[in-house]
Length: 122
Image 1 (cartoon, rainbow, N blue to C red):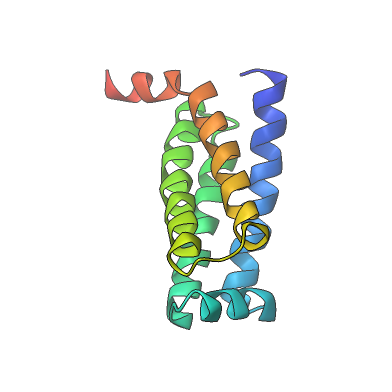
Image 2 (cartoon, one colour):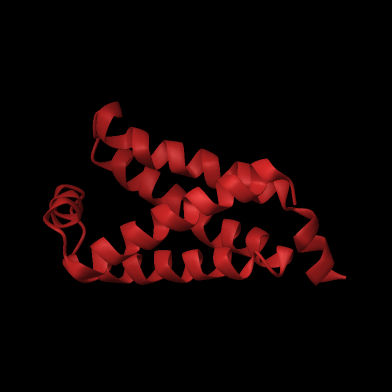
């Protein structure tokens, strides 16, 4: 793993741990976003759990590099769906930018650690 990969992984661990925890806790910010997207509040909790699992996989990735790539796929799919949800309700770019930004970061991290996927397949 490169220093860039470790730093990116660490930043994403923090983001997904805090974001997932805030979703589960029912932070007004996230409750309002899910309401605006037309998604039920129980889905906010499910999304928070998915993000916490992704953060845990990223943490495991410090010891087992293949976990980083799998976490990237797990969180990447989640973030792509978040982008689609924002596009579906025609949110302005300001409200969609964070989802696009974190989708890009998780894709970069996954590509950097893609050899981990090959280790688990073969």
